[in-house]
Length: 507
Ligand code: GLU
Image 1 (cartoon, rainbow, N blue to C red):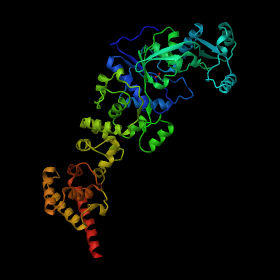
Image 2: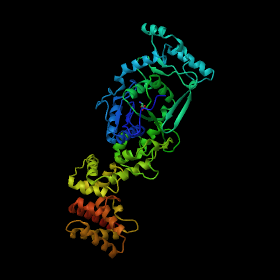
Image 3: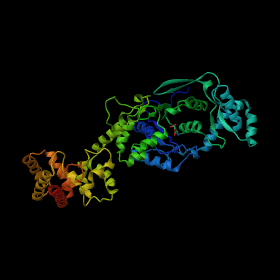
């Protein structure tokens, strides 16, 4: 094995190589994040490489979604298709000639061969293997065709693929930074296809070639690549290159912890308002900082205690050694937890700026002054920003329509509720402005005088003014609503209660 190409302390060159075929989910976000952290920590480069060799499955909308998701998460790349860099192009479909050249090198050195087997022949081989209870793999028919003959057939226009010539004996040893050395029996490995009949290289070749030419020092990728890990190491070694350091990231399991997430699970989850897709988290108003913190800890820990991390802290503290090979179950409660922590951690101005679009999306207009007063009222209470409209609707609507029954708290009769409302009306009308200083003590006094709990008298006021049982702090909210509107609503409440009381006594 060639000597290690990375010496501790050097800047790392790492890459995220998504195949844009679907919507970006947390698995991709985590891979991107860990790569990003290593690049930032070591003053290295984070490369975005679009792995679009499977042109049939490539979806431009998925690429768009990917770019938006990474940007929203704050994972900016130093080299990539849009920003360029010294090792481009950064799109595999634009690097075909290089892969072809490397494939031919492998053929010339005897590490790969042209295979002319037709689909029918391959199917027949597979049927035969099935009948004999053998592992399904390439039977080796074209391994023995001489290079001269093969080249003549290629030149004559015969259709071919290029396969890696896997040794039939011995073992292949590979090293993963989390798992240590892994040894594979070569006899269990296939002669994998490197270049398809349409001339396009597949992942097994393209990505190894790119990692080499892009001088990637560390490959952090999903655990699903472990079965073909020996192939990848052999391709690199056959080309005479040094291997990067390999890190295979554990899988995410369903919230139940039982098995991998399937497409069905994902859809069921979305129905219940949970999602593994980054764009959904964005729409639900999770702060990206919270998503990052949550995802960072799905497979990595710092000291088993610290749970709050900003991106800067992650950059300082992240390490490959602390990654876990154990698969982690997705826990949406934790997402909410981290979301809340990060909402609290934002400055008022920053949070205000993020809240604004959620208010405006409801058709409300909000001036900066009101927004800056409103934000601290919401900040201790929010988990996601899409909750904002429900908290503040009563402040922006011209009118609210409480149900008369709702104005009467549990354990109180309508006549008492009416007396509370009237008492409140006097307090508010007498106050110069609806501030704590002016009205809090009189409201407390009213409760004492009437021998009621403070919560009960506030309930009457809250329902009349907001028509909802839970609001941000009420006095501050009324201040934002303004004295005139507040009093109008309380008067309406008094009328409703009067009708209720009179109606009841009429009967
Ligand atoms: N294109 C591969 C994928 O989407 C990338 C794997 C890797 O990082 O090497 O799974």
